[in-house]
Amino acid sequence: MFDFLDSGQYDVLGAFWVTVQLTLYSAVGSLIWGTVLAGMRVSPVPLLRGFGTAYVNLVRNTPLTLLVLGCSLGLSQTLGIDLAGDTFKETGFRLAVLGLIAYTGTFVCEALRSGINTVPVGQAEAARALGLSFFQVLTLIVLPQAFRAVIAPLANVLIALTKNTTVAATIGVAEAALLMKEMLENEAQAVFAVFAVFALGFVLLTLPTGLLLGWVAKRVAVKR
Amino acid sequence: MTSVLYDAPGPRAKARNWIYSGIFVVLFGLVLWWALSLMSEKGQLDADKWSPFVTDSRVWTTYLIPGLMETLKAGALAMVIALPLGAVLGIGRLSDHAWVRAAVGAWVEFFRAIPVLMLMLFSNALYAPQLMDVPSDTRPFWAVVTGLVLYNSAVIAEIVRAGVLSLPRGQTDAAKAIGMRKGQTMTYVLIPQAVTAMLPALVSQLVVILKDTALGGALLGFAELLATYRQISANYSNAIATLVVIALIYIVVNFVLTTFASQLEGRLRKSKKGTGAVLGAEEIDDAVPGANTAAGA
Image (cartoon, rainbow over all chains, first blue to last red; front, side):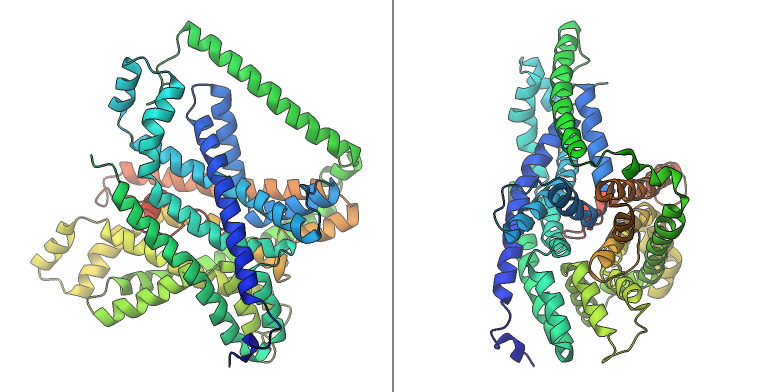
């Protein structure tokens, strides 16, 4: 039943490795971009707040598929920005990561912002009374507590991101979903077996993430 | 405007804010200027690339509006099927019988862990001529709907579970005290209140479903809104303009839904009906790890 795995025709592990790489690069990128966006959304400068709000609302309501396609068709094919990718494969990978960061950053931002709201007002007031500036209050007092409060929501975002990397298949990045599509077309008699292989792969990727980060979240939670 | 982080600005803070605003405007302007000059260099700002969306009504009547209709149709149908299915699964997870809890739990956890795109690809292969022979013109539509139903019924099951668990214990105790059976407690006391509590989260979930239909257009040939970019940009060779207009349509539709959901949430929180427990999408995510009510593709 699973003999298509032995034929050597399909590199299932390789495809999942691309999925993992997409996830890791996009996770790091969207953590940085999301923190910057959250900083903008809580900053005292109205213009920065406005930009952050507008960005989050616009991008969150756009399908990820459209963003990734836009990176590929708009940026790369029409405007010729290939993000210094030498080969077609490299270019597609980088464009997909860019689209994933643009999209996932908004969810990181919203998670962090709700984390900032869990910090008691008295903490920030005390910090200001000691004469700390906005930047010091944010980086020394509020964000460290906020990050500890949002590990569970961020784990959700990471799991969603892992699943969302499959969207890269729409621009031909050779990750798990694209290989699954190819295999479903070629191995029509083994539809269930092919699905089982890829489903198992994703369960193995997402389940440990949720369990591990859920455990970490409980360990580091600020007891109030 | 004050927040946890800063006081109402005094004269010096105001001046500083103006400087920061200025720096931001300059940086943003530079990026915008670079993007626009690049676009005009490639002829993407020419009037004939953008004017079809205003002057040529055929763009709307033959492509965009039918595409939007397909998107809405698939989304609405998926929601209508996934809702009762998700409610049953959610109640199953709260069953008193361990084997029901285990079986339903495994089902829900499994379909929540699989990307919705893979579920769509799988359904598409399942509906192929060799296996089930769904007519080829409606096959992508049914594949998309099936994928969405499998995934979202699992997510809705978690929403329902969180909704029931959010109710005060006293509700169950009181129902028991007046002699209600288990089924009666569920149908007359818990479910109606849970549904009220979850309504905003369910409306938000519709946004996720609508966005996810775009996957079917990109990989299965489902003729939804995003897929219309191929015909439009083939006719007018204006890829960027088309993608921008399609993005705006998605943003407007989803923004309307999001606003409706949050207004509903506000109204329910104020009303005297129910126990006052209202779960927005974010609270569901906090209550149920991995539910991802907001972050669909």
